[in-house]
Image (cartoon, rainbow, N blue to C red; front, side, top):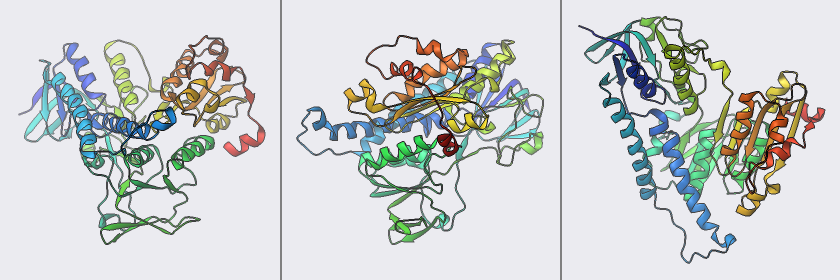
Length: 467
């Protein structure tokens, strides 16, 4: 016999718990289902644990640079990976407990710990339980892609999830994938003391960025003695005694890299293949992402998909924004839409990259006349004072509308400073509003108005290269 609810929420990532509590606060009887850890990717294997480890790596890096700041450290800098992991685990546990207790503490929410599967468009099974509701919300997240490469199943490999269990220092970590996840781990473990090699199939790192951003990030990593192997067109794996051989087939360099451990960081896939979506008639695309409209409704009335499983963002902040959009439409009579939001995200290497809106390539693809302002961090006072002058700031403007199209801030505080630009983009204000703003000195953000006062048309040669 089924238990009836007003709503069922599946998945305890960033959207699910907030939505469940909001629905319960509106008087609905809510069933909440989570099969694994409360908090989803962000809390358990993503943002919170990795940025906690990034902080430990930064402390080690800064300690080694102490002499540059006139600080003498008598003994050798050593990293205790057991303590790094223990600190990370404590931060994660606090967050995960908070999410679970929040849900269980609401009398209008019944929490089920198990694997949810559709039995029909309005019925879900959790072990021997049957739950029904007129509204079902899916926030089931995603996981690392395991690429079908020669020898991959014959070696022990790590993913972003299993990296969270590492309490030792790999002698030589080979990372397959030169994008956001892989590069954060690369710098982190290099600073902990591992040798690190990044193997990337493309001709440059983080290829969704403009070439100048990719090149600058590559230089930052190489300055810390991280080896980058691009154009790796024939990647494969083999055991080599107690080590692992990774074939790369690059244009130059040795055809094989021998490492102690391999991290696979080549992308993500949605956790939708074992939900029984076919029994509910819910449509997915060729990659398994649930198809949704501008208000996150699936093709089946009464079923919504939020977070990483819908392919609309793949970030913690886009997942939470999905919750806000659904709640606004259902409960506030506020017709918010996914298409109203502006793309923004960060790459949390050091220094970090803050990105908002379009790249130069995207702006040029729209046949726009583009103005660009750019300044190296070596000409930003705050960066010079901190001794952190790698990177640059760039803002892109539509010459005709005078609206800001996008920005990339790669440098100290770039992940925070970019919000100056992002907020102006949401306001749809002309760039001159920000150009004439008075910012605090000395900060990184104070140079954004200066950059906007130095805009230049994108040169045709540059435009061809970017496009």
